[in-house]
Length: 465
Image 1 (spheres, rainbow, N blue to C red):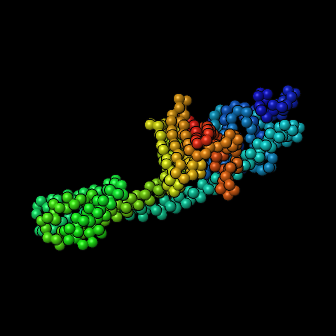
Image 2: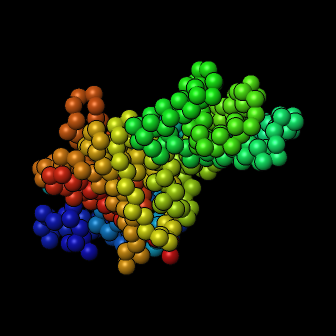
Image 3: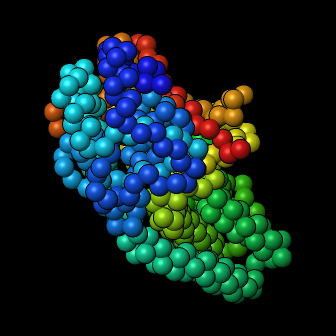
């Protein structure tokens, strides 16, 4: 049995047999606990069958440090540090481990240099991983605290402002109805119908942003403004240029105004123009206010979805990949707009759910998109594509059109603390966290493909059975 374990590959058959006598094999059912965080460290473990999950609990929040399958080992950190277990071990499925007690573990290290070298090397890597997890944990707790505060402080006033906008729109419409009723004594029924139509168009254009300002090029818009100014001047409307911008926003043309102006007194017509301009301005301002309040509500919702404040951090559940990607893009929209980066989405229809931790997966999308932003610079392009594989997996590909990553760097890109960024701009933690969350926490796979002009990271995750 020990012949197949890489840790012992340089030992002779006689030495392997000698080690076999000093250890003991134990098997566990799915869900059985091998050891608990805080227990005295007494054994060194080698997995011979199944999978064991190692996790750490802090402040009632559990973080998965890794999963260990056949031919892997763990437990050396606590033994070498002569401390209690810094994490807990749990059998994910029916699993068997070969264990060596503390004395035999130290004896094994003393007698066999090849084993000592491998164990110490892995211990160094795992200590780095624990440092990364601790750093990420602190950042995540800070994010959760900040997000909870923001959600509480912003959600209530945003809801109140949104209700106020709706009430103000209703009140404003009632006021304009009364004003128009008052104007009936100065207008014929035909003119009144034209005015009512203009009122309807005013709100339709202003509240839905379906206006000429957005659909016409600057030269065409200037021509229309000049035409409207001349038309107003010909009818004795002073400072008509002050009204043209708002009238154009509502899509009002000289032809429409002519149906009213030709049959009313100049002063009355000026009052009508002022009324229409006021209606447009107020409707536009309400539209801006409504969009602003809606954006605040959207950001609050994105923060809650991103950090999953309403769930325990460790809660595993059926989650939507697309929802996580969209929440992350919303969170990073400022940086994307700041650098004028185009995001192309190519989402698969009816993408199945996956079972996992939505909060930690959102950290994966954040790190990959953030790296893509750095790679493309100004006015670059990022493509996000999802697909379903035949082997019950979903794939998320995040690609950019940056300069690319050299082959030498690609071989080390997921190593802890490895970075090609300038000092102070990169920690080397992001991609190692991506690897840990995808591979060790979700039993998935992440790979990097790069050539000049295109780099893509492909994340594969198992779907819900």
